[in-house]
Length: 68
Image (cartoon, rainbow, N blue to C red; front, side):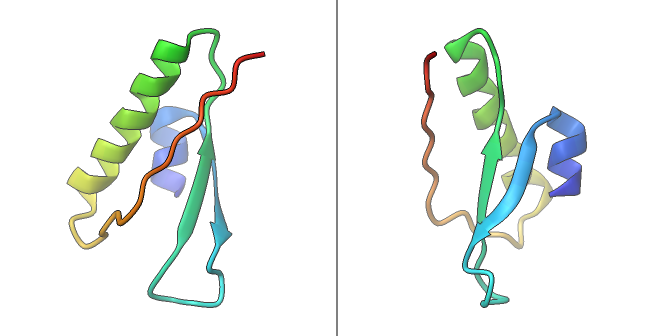
């Protein structure tokens, strides 16, 4: 999580399944004035995790872009 936070300047935290050492739910947040940029950042983060941590399996990936 620290690598992702430092590399992409996002907020990231473990948000679920805290009792299990084999599984983790990670939530992250990125604030931008462009939904396209926010979408690109989230996809770059996913690729970064997959490329730098081949031992981690991303079994589900959800994103929500909120417009204010």
